[in-house]
Amino acid sequence: TLAGKTAVITGSTSGIGLAYAKALAAEGANIVINGFGAADAIEAERAGIESTYDVKCIYHGADMTKPAEIADMIGTAVTSFGSVDVLINNAGIQHVEAIENFPIEKWDAIIAINLSSAFHSIRAALPHMKRTGWGRIINTASAHALVASPFKVAYVAAKHGIAGLTKTVALETAEDKITVNAICPGYVWTPLVEKQIPDTMQARNMTEEQVKKDVLLAAQPTKEFVTVDQVAAIAVFLCSDAAASITGSLLPVDGGWTAQ
Ligand code: NAD
Image (cartoon, rainbow, N blue to C red; front, side, top):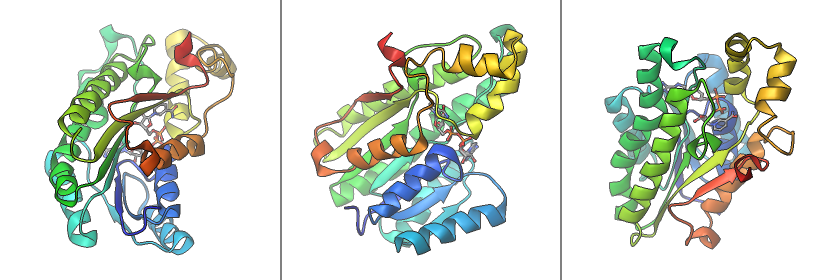
């Protein structure tokens, strides 16, 4: 149980992040949700988490490209709830295009949101975990932290970077009762995947059905999308005492993708 603990989850207004927020709230943690979206939809999710799970939930709108806003999000969690016990770095975006045409500003945004934001949030949160003597840092990496695919140069580079960040911080915190791990999902059906289908159709000259079958699920031997709840269940386990010796790990949840 995570009763009395506080979890900050970046990019949790949608998809995998929202599933983490609900799963940790179900364990009793107070929650800070973050991410973009319509204000009324975000407020409905926030209030829903409070009423469904009988915990406190606040929203912080920090933009993960802005280090000062990330620090303010961690500071707000501490002033609201006393500390940050669980930090899940999950915000992420994708862009699918050949490197010669890959927009420079997309490279910069993906490196900032998918990689550097985790550095900034961990840097701000760690002193609080050390103060309380317990912590769990979980980074949503990807199968693309372990293997590459064409046309995703910034994403694959950022996710491989997250793998290195995860291992390094795990070593720096190994004696502090803090674990640092990365979850590496294969294809999960979320808005992020849905949105890349048109660009992939264009880049590979394929129909939507061909993209789903021959590009997305072609890599995944189970031929099934991973679910957000399956990913969130791994995070809950990593927060348990049973997982205290798992640190610096990259945990695939990919239907066999990276076994190939
Ligand atoms: P999603 O698009 O549903 O959610 C992304 C979240 O990040 C949203 O809440 C969005 O508002 C937020 N976000 C985007 N830019 C932001 C910014 N600048 N500042 C703050 N928040 C921002 O996507 P998802 O599939 O749930 O992805 C979540 C994570 O899982 C990402 O890191 C993604 O790379 C990773 N992942 C996804 C898959 C998949 O197949 N869906 C597979 C492996 C890894």
